[in-house]
Image (cartoon, rainbow, N blue to C red):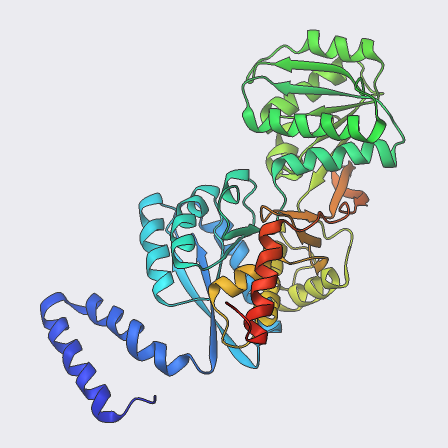
Length: 423
């Protein structure tokens, strides 16, 4: 029913009373909940942007938002309606994050994108689930963001997935059936990634002894000679080196001194960082290979080139940050899910559509969501040449897993709803 002038006047009168008692915030909430909701619902679809737009994590948030807004400029409509981006600044603060998400959900977005920073997404997960609105994390690599949180998805892979991709690189690209591992013993994330690398090597080779040498070390240690000598004695040509950047660089420096030039060390996406290169300096990056969240060295899909062209036109730069490319993908996946969910869809409908995402061709690679909401996707494997990052190959995702019984039931429920046969 359209609002008459008399009805609006009555509402505004009530709002003025509230304003007198509680101030401007009460009236703004009232306006958002009633007036704006009804006047914009027919011609606008809202997508929430939940990011640190101020505070210590502002730079990371800005890069993600750049990608979201660039995608929105290219694809400003879905289902014949304008897409409106509605923003919430979590201020790089855990307390502010709760308020920001609660306020954002009052604007009734169909899906929320973000946040940069794992902790802010973890804080948001309860609010999203309660409101039945899905979220898409962009650069969150912590497995807990999606684990047991059915309304959160992500477009970047988790840390452990990099271990799997690097094992495939060793076996498929280098044709090696044995490898080694060095890992800090008290780093749970590193141990998890190393475990994935080991499991994949064993699966690919059919050999329980595919990891010929497994060495642990204490994070922050200065002497790795015992572990490196064991690696040298094993005769392996590759070693997966898990852990933080500082430890990795210290290991690589000592390996060079011990003349382990025939051993290629494998690392995760942190090795592409400026911090890694600054600490490493010249001379120790010749025998390193690492996975990456995104590279503009290799356009792995048609969307990759579309993104780079649009980015260069808008910002005048040929190279884009991974967070920006992933933000671009998050928006595109969101509007595709809304399109599949159909006219008058709810956040729950969009969540069900997101769960069925398969073979999405994004700027950062091909993406298929698994049963947790994590992407099975292409992983670019890089190395350094003269201190410059250079792509070696792209590891395509494995065949998509079978849909879970839960997702099959959701598909059936949607079909019944469309056919008018729902119980």
